[in-house]
Figure 1 (spheres, rainbow over the protein chains, first blue to last red):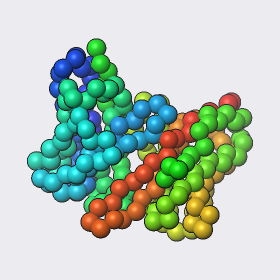
Figure 2: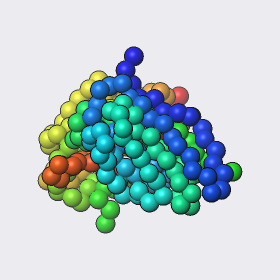
Figure 3: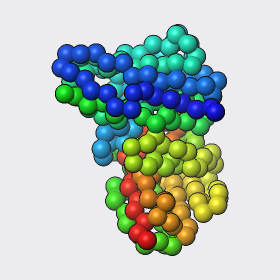
Figure 4: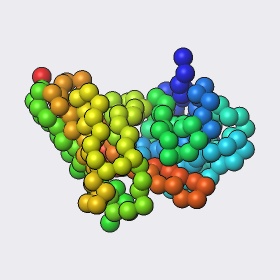
Length: 113
Length: 113
């Protein structure tokens, strides 16, 4: 059953803590993306990767980091430098580039304790 | 002026009504246009993808693109309570080796039984 999985569904972060959100896809897609969604703000691009071992900053990359060591996986780390991390985080993938259809995972809701 | 503007909503209609959702854009470089549907606390799912001006129909859904006037619309016929969701427009362009989508903020639709 092909698709995108994100874990955990809910994540709690303490002050000064780094947390990592997981994103895995078995669609054989080359490109993967991380978005942040806040109420009334729509989706904003954090990072994207079009090939293994390469990634680019999106519009709001500060306070976040990513890696792309495998085609199937694109984890996002929310660092302590991100002062307002509470949001709904969405991972997406597409076959080659964003020109093609992006398929989204179910999302991870991050809350700050 | 934002690149993509979407009617803010929320929108409430009775079951069976025709729904019209609209987005306008300012960047004439956008080449492809999408509509996503997002149920509460879920990831967005693609409804329609269009590449050229004109209408594209899929069941009860019709996507309309007018590049000369820089607006896109999604029409939902015979609306049903299961159509209650947030609808996001998205637009993309290819810039060299990279391409990315720009999303509207979304409009929340409620279809009353």
